[in-house]
Image (cartoon, rainbow, N blue to C red):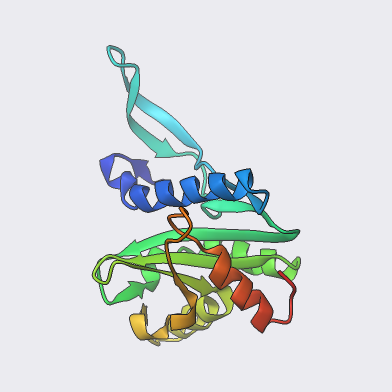
Length: 180
């Protein structure tokens, strides 16, 4: 079972920016997307400050966010990498299975990936993720290279929205012949 400590907060800035973005989308009536909390079981609690100092993950989480945008169900996970690629080991098999099942139910699954080296965020459609995932399981490449992230799916900050992922999402849906 996994344990939570300060290492568990990696990527929290990215998730905070996405949550702020989702609030703006909700306020503007563009979508309702929520952060899915990971269930934890507290082990140690600092009684003086009433904070959890040690806990373990009670069960595996699915993805970081789920909701709907203009009637389209979406689910996605946020990943951050300091490398020139996204290591496949950063994605868990239960997440792939959940996203695959979500897609089969006519939802849209994807990743939002932040490359710290380039200070860039990308929308990565599940079909690209799944292709690299399957190759890695067949002794293929163990990461998704930066160059595999479609440049048209670069996520920009605009109109007061920090991680404006609706634009690349709509572009992707348009490419899939789905109205956004």
